Image 1 (tube, helix red, strand yellow):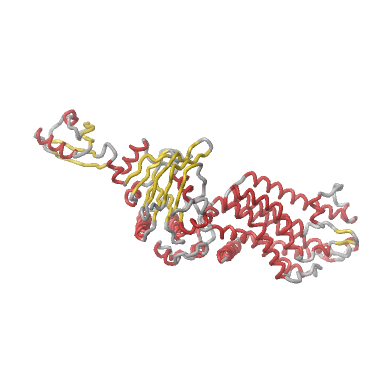
Image 2 (image 1 turned 45 degrees about the horizontal axis):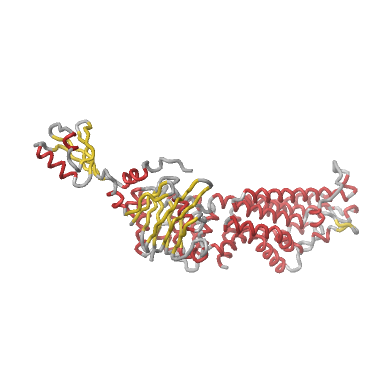
Length: 306
Length: 279
């Protein structure tokens, strides 16, 4: 049975639909990514799942519980890291951990958790003296204190340096190995591509695509792009005759060929027929980012936060 | 209950790390009392004050000041900060039944601290007549109960979101003025001191300080609740309390022929609020 089910969820803010009929399920032990530009409804979606917002219609079930009705039970099973949530400035890391672990019936050992997140040295440091990355790791630690079955991580690695980001990824993978289901809200492509088993791409309150990262990438039309420099000039129109090629154009000395399927083989056999050698060749595969642009029609973070 | 205890400890610690907060609430009033008490004429028993000294008049005023600072400045500000930094929200996604309960510990904690004012040696330096409470334990229980009673609606309401908050705040408004002040009724016998013959003086003491405290905490809860509507209401209530405290103080002067002349105007009526508090 799916551990998280969202069925035809709708949430309006005034006239505007923040979430406009979202349906998906997440299986136990999965890392499920929610990807989308700012204002796509990602945070509203997770807030509905956390039970912080009441949806206008549709239903949500987390571990078989309704987030609004069975709130008390759900709180023991769900760990969440909220976007931009802070702690009192003068509270130390150790005090925060002790305080929050007292809320749970069966908390994990917070010393161990701090060790995993390499925060042990900061145990007596006050919150406002922590670096951005340390604050973020503390937020993760607080989310995991109750030994949750489902963890929701909202904009987890925003504001982290590359090393800290990789450390967090390792932590998430370690969590998954322990059977924790993770809902990861992000707008970092690299992160989604690396971690997620499946990704839901949100745009304007709707799911525009739901697939594995590679599935999403393969679904994009311009899957591959070749940049090649033939030994003698070649008419791009000849390349366009190939069924695999979608576009071909001259760019300086280089030919830029976009296409799908076995593009490389088709192009190289054409070059062989024309008795041309290749002096330079570069293959560019589409990234998740290209997939994203193709799906939503715009780049990430180009839209204003509402 | 360990969550409640833990949060109380944690909040007490945070309070102790804010010298400005405890300075104004706990250190400044006794200090002022000492300074005022140094003036020799303030220590002379006055016939027209029913044998009281001016310093006797200041004790309740300073306690009221301390409570007011905590209730109207420190608490709402702290809750507003907690809301702003999404600390309340983070608490809400933990098993919050306890944390709702716990938040009111934040609330009653400074009140308990304040209660210690009654035992503050500074208040005894000048032989103030108000005796310290006979049974501190009982009073503390009452204060706690009062705090628990009135902080519950506000804090849990602010945690739970709008609908419940609304219901509870109504309940709050009804129950609060009766529960909390009772906690301080037995505190350093303000009342006894304020009787002049058959006429009881209106002092800005117990009643008003308590009511100010209540409104302050409602203000805090409203600030935590993100409800502008409630906030406006609580602000209004708090201002009303302040006003009635002011009236009480001036009418206090007025009752004394010797002091009445100092006022630029005469008060012709008392608000029901004031009369009730002085009951």
